[in-house]
Length: 165
Image 1 (cartoon, rainbow, N blue to C red):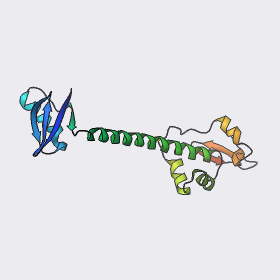
Image 2 (image 1 turned 90 degrees about the vertical axis):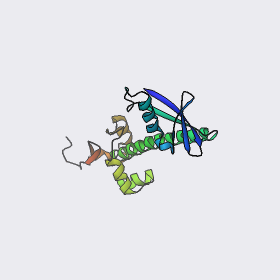
Image 3 (image 1 turned 135 degrees about the horizontal axis):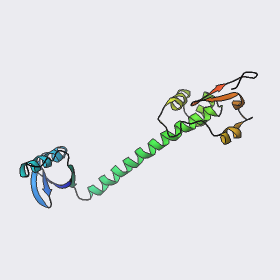
């Protein structure tokens, strides 16, 4: 069950309203959700309110819009950060699979060599697979790729005259 309470600031803390009617009071907003459950348990003791989804909406005027915009921007930044991390992991893996050294991969990604190793060995990522044959062919002859054999998320060197199978 979902229930929304409106919180109005007053000198002693916050007055909590349900359906436009004052229901209970609380000193600080962090205790408002439990206070609403306690109030509901008092007026309806036969119902278990412990798993109800209680939303507290503080009446703070124009600041509410500012707070809402800030929370949304934070959520979007978090989502973008997660997406960027996944892309960095995939790019590092693909560079290494294409035969670029850790040092060259670090220069291309503009990170340290240690960070390249972290990215390649970290997970989970959306792309933990080897490069496609098309990408592998694109780099063939321009890198040391011709002696590399995919092994999971790493490429192993097979020198000239060695068995590649």
